[in-house]
Image 1 (cartoon, helix red, strand yellow):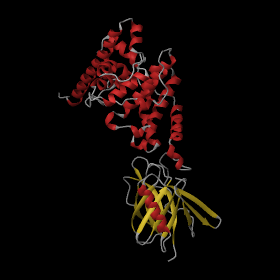
Image 2 (spheres, rainbow over the protein chains, first blue to last red):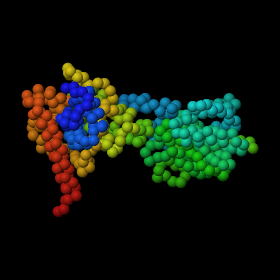
Image 3 (cartoon, each protein chain N blue to C red):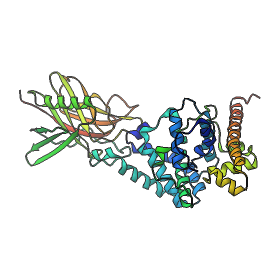
Image 4 (cartoon, each protein chain N blue to C red):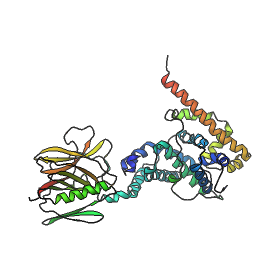
Length: 267
Length: 186
């Protein structure tokens, strides 16, 4: 049966069982939905009749599908998540295993050069024969975009302490920038996957072999996190980002996801 | 759901592991085809994954929403296989599913399968037949009337009254379950 638009309430009540069962043709079902969206009558019968349907499903004995379905579904889900493309090289979906040493192999970067484009910040680092570039995709958050621009401007200040952060094996697609000036400190990281349940990312300033917390890094949906605040006065040799359990201790317990050595601009 | 909105694949894994068996059982019961049932389940979970940001917690549990998507998708497939005047249109079932709020907080979470089946057993034979032909068979009321050889008005009454009777029976079972868990005074 195909019924046109502008259904009255009596017709809605008559159609309610077939509507909740999903056996109306699409045109009629659309007309019912349109009526329900605008009608001041609550049409409680829809909820009364529809509310029992899930219990019909649950009256069945559970049947497990083939294990292959799980892998197929997850592969399709990863491919269909649009923002996943913004984290190149991102692979890990599970908690990483053994803890990596806090002080790992660092890359020294005595010279920095960067360029800012309208839609993204491209920072090219030249170090003799070693060079790499990372992009920080400006997300829709104007607040984060402003923080990033401030960090970049601060990185050019005389005396600023700057570290380019590079993803470790735990997060090969991650990269970031840490800047400490006389007036402020900022850490921007992109390319991190969302933290697993009961975990969070934390940044650390490391002097010698002694870490102190720079703060918790809250990620946006696109894998970018910004941490900003007043300046950090103590000595800093390295900056690192780790994945910490919520019930962990005051020091770093989790593996390193990104890190970089600090360089100080000439005064 | 919030984690899935953020693209956290682990959240989808958790959802799938928790509900895959009940979802597949429903899809298999409706389609009677293992491969089609897998396709339905895959589409349903992908629909939830892609539309997680549209989920409104106050309008029904995730389980209810997921099973509704499975049901609609399975019925679409079954009806598309039948010669019919009106073929369901292609589309993302998760977008067209009307999320129905769980109406009875006192029922949700209190009923196991045995109690649900006990509630179903309270329906009359003809009511249960009509409800199951509609829900698991995807038959319209006209088609059910043809199948069972009853007038259309009779079938409409059986389905409406059957669903309302089931609702009351579920409430009664929940009351019994509540009494059994808190009573035990002896």
